[in-house]
Image (cartoon, rainbow, N blue to C red; front, top):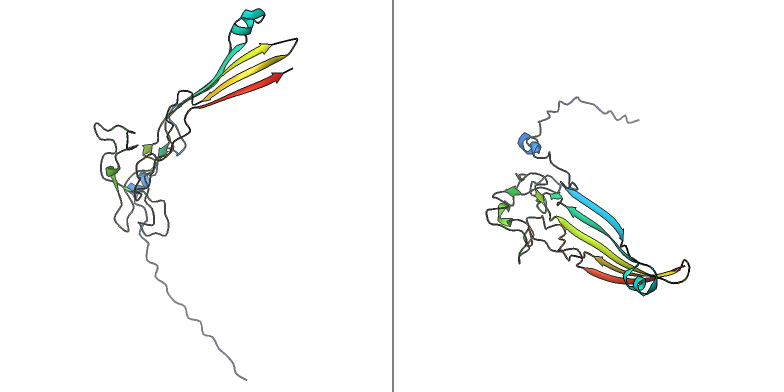
Length: 210
């Protein structure tokens, strides 16, 4: 009979302290505003029945008008400037870039032919194996200025019957409503607005109410 004996030995394992991935100074930059926080937001909805006659020829022309709409003003949401890939070599992405200059130097105006949100030369890739020094959510995207308006005209005939003709305008002032800018420093289009919301849209409708 063969007997297998397993001897156990107590091993002392020395655990070396791992250096912190984020320094105290970098950790202080994590305190910021949320990604979906707008400093200012104003929304107004309104309906106005324009006074006027409803009978006779004059009522058919000047009566039954209604103006309604939704108007919105909103400041932009804050975003971080990020790097693509694992620059810090920690096994994850979503790392921030280095801030090396002023994103809004004197004389700089957002937009223009290049559709720049800020000066992209103000950011750079961090050194391999390190985190970027830029703060979290330090650049805001474009503000919103939008008017959705409807103009309606009622044509009355008989008792309790009318035809409603609707004219609806979305983004009635045709303001450019930029979407989020390219916030990845590795991209060729970094710092630019690459897309925008729809321009003015006009539509008509006809409804019988009885």
